[in-house]
Amino acid sequence: MHLNDTKGYKIFRVVNIIVMILIVIATFLPFVNIVAQSFSSERYITAGEVFLLPRGFNVDTYRAVLQNQRFWIHYRNTIVYTVVGVAIAMFLTTLLAYVLSKPKTRLKGKGFWVGFAVFTMFFAGGIIPTYIVYNNTLNITNTMWAVVFPLALSIYNMLIMKAFFENLPTALEEAASIDGMSTYGIFLKIILPLSKPILATMTLFYAVAYWNAWFQAFMFLNEWTLFPVTLFLRNLISGATATGEAAAAEAGSTQIASNVRSVAMFLTVLPIIMVYPFVQKYFVSGIMLGSVKE
Figure 1 (cartoon, rainbow, N blue to C red):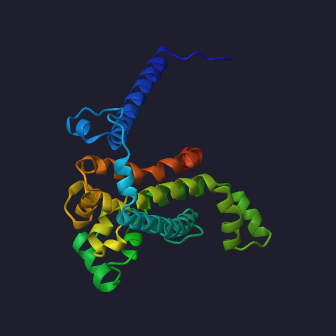
Figure 2 (cartoon, rainbow, N blue to C red):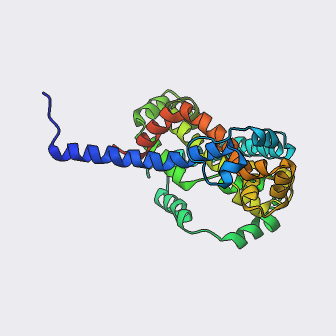
Figure 3 (cartoon, helix red, strand yellow):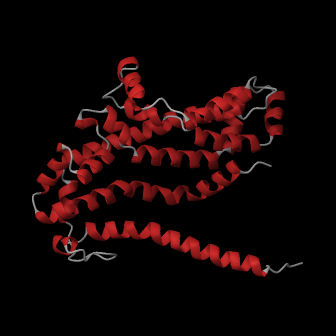
């Protein structure tokens, strides 16, 4: 039997589609404008005549930025920070989420530990105490760990993964336990293979967070050879550090100085844009499964 949509639901669908289209346009247009500026000439950029299509097409800035040795050093740093950070973050998040997903009968004090984790989402130590801990106690300032550790565990991501684990059939674990499989064996051979959607989703979340991170590097790193590419981009935009000034000086022309920022922005976000389509299906299913409890 086919049920016709009500008039109110049809109106809701139309309004919803219109709102989604407007959001997509508002999100997509600035990026298109940046790409257009990166391929445009100085005369049209300074005149404000570049919108969606390049004017006075050129690739001089791309050539200058790609030939900049510092840019590739920062790019390499970002790749290293992202790979190492995601590996550590996924290890910590997955283990904590799996433990906290167990019922109170198996995990004593579960309510306390969940509440303790949620507490850290709203209350932090502050910048100065954090710097003192990193510099004096852990002694990791001016090292890659100062960039990796602050993002190594997201409680928000952990709670989503915890909800996903709670929705998995407990009968599978019980059957494996009866067959003599240990807790670690159940986790590695049963839970993780069934958790590909949420693992891909969390990996994407952490990868984007590490790739876009610049404040930790700005606060804890002094050596420019350790800077990630996002801090290099930040310096280009603000013009406040020698890194940005050197990049503009090495460009050597008014043309390059006028759109070097757009080029750096585009080259910075390009890897994430290329990776996202391959994990999109896992992203959608992972969020839905991790947010609804039966």
